[in-house]
Length: 387
Image 1 (spheres, one colour):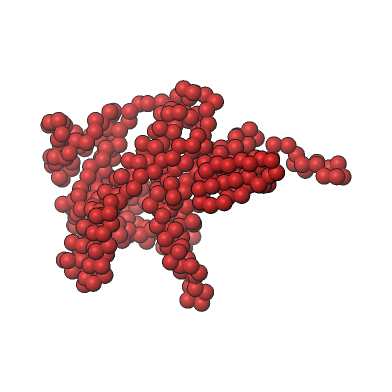
Image 2 (spheres, one colour):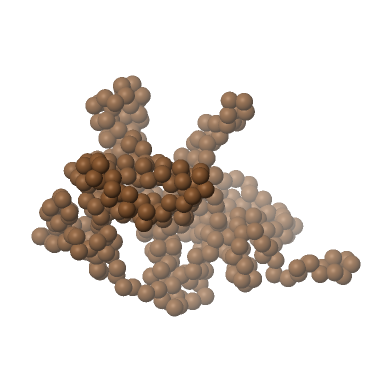
C-alpha cells in the first residue's frame, strides 16, 4: 500500500508540474488552490486517485507550490520512477496517533494504513506536528516533525569565541584550533561488495527482477554510508557550536565544484577521470551536509554561522603572511619571508585564514559575497578617497 500511495503522489506531482509549466508558457499562473480544486474533479474521473489518502495528495501539491516559488517552475525536477524514493506526508495531526508499546517498539495509526508497528529509535521530545512515510535502502521509515518549543539563546555561553573551518578531501573538517575531524564511511568489505554489485548491474537486463534486487542491495549499502555521514556531521557540528560563538565557513558552490567535466561532443572535457575522482571525494566528505548540521545545531546554542567568499581567504593570506606564504605540500605551509620561518599544517593555516576573513567581514557588517571587506578606504596619490 505504501508503494501504491507513493506512486500516486509521484503521478500527482508530475501532472501538476506539467500543468504549471504549460500555464507559464502561456503567460498565465496556476497556484495551489486551483490545483486542489481540480484534484477533486480528477478523483471523480480517475477512481485510482481515491486509493491514496486525500491529505497526502494535497500535501504533495503544497510541496510543489513551495518548490516552484522558491526555485522556479522550470527548475523544479520531475519525480522519476527509477530515481525517486517513494514518500508521502500526513500534515494533519488529528488524522493519526502515536503510541509506545514497549522499550524498543511503538505503533502509529495512519489513514488507510491502520496501525503500523515501527522501531522506536529515540524519544519524540515534543508535540508531534506531522508524519512522513518514506522508503530508504529497501526499508520503510516513518519520521515525525516535532515542536520541542526550544528557543534560540540570545547569547552564546562562551561569547567572544570563534573558529574557522576548512573543508577538504583529505580530511573532512579542520578547525583553526588545530582539531581534525574525519572518519571512513565505508568499510573495505562494503567497498568490494559494492563494486561487484556495480558489475552485476551492468550485466543485468533492464526491467528484470535480478536488476531490481541488485539495485536494492546497492541501496542498502549506500543508505548505511549516508547514515554514518549524517551521524558524523551531526556530532562534529554539535562539538563545534558548543565551544564557539562564531563559526566561519567558506561560501563554496559545492554543486558547481562537483559538476562533471565531460563537456560536449564538439568540445570534450579535460582530465575527466581525475575530475570524477575529485567529485566523488567532495561528495563523500559531506561538505554541504556539515553546513546544514551547523545551521541546525547553532539554533540551540546561539552560535552565529558566517560564510565568507573563498576569495576573501586569499586576501587574508596576503595580509597575515605579507605575500610570502607558500604551500610546500598537501600538509605543510611555510612562510618564505626573510627571518619569519612560520610553519604550520596547511589545512590548519587555511582554517586560520578563514577565521580572519570572517572577523573582517563581521567588523564591516557586510556579509555579502559581492562587496569589499576592506576595513578602511583606499587613498590614491591624488588624495581622492575610494569607498
